[in-house]
Length: 216
Image (cartoon, rainbow, N blue to C red; front, side, top):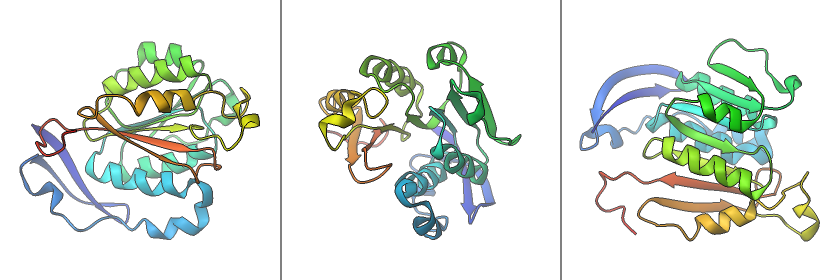
């Protein structure tokens, strides 16, 4: 399988080429410097760091369902990798005043998915915190996701029962439990319980079929 591949160092494009899965694309050691952001980004530092690493290997678009503090982090990652960020929210004031690498969709995620036709490397699901909505969003974008891409789900590890309120974590944790039982030949799943406002951040990576030792 042939994929476009770009090499970045400290946010600057240093090489652009076409690589094969059996080529040297996993041998490069010039990873971008992501450690500097850890102290300043605090509770979202895991997302910020992982996004840059993911986009280094998979320079495809980002989708954010539910804008907020994560938007500026994802936009920075999109600009550094020269990919597009799609951000969706019901509230117009969450739109950032940025013209590059950024498209804001004002409305419901169901309507956005009717017109979305791109291949994302990263999807953050953090809109409506109800199980059925999050499940519909996950199923749609997992099918669109590039192999090796990651879906992040927020609010998947509430710390106590009062966090199950709809305006808090809701019942998205049930979706995490469902995903943990899915076919491990298709995906891997891991939850960080102590990040992203300490409500849990689950990462689901779509496995690559061309890597024979990545089986269940």
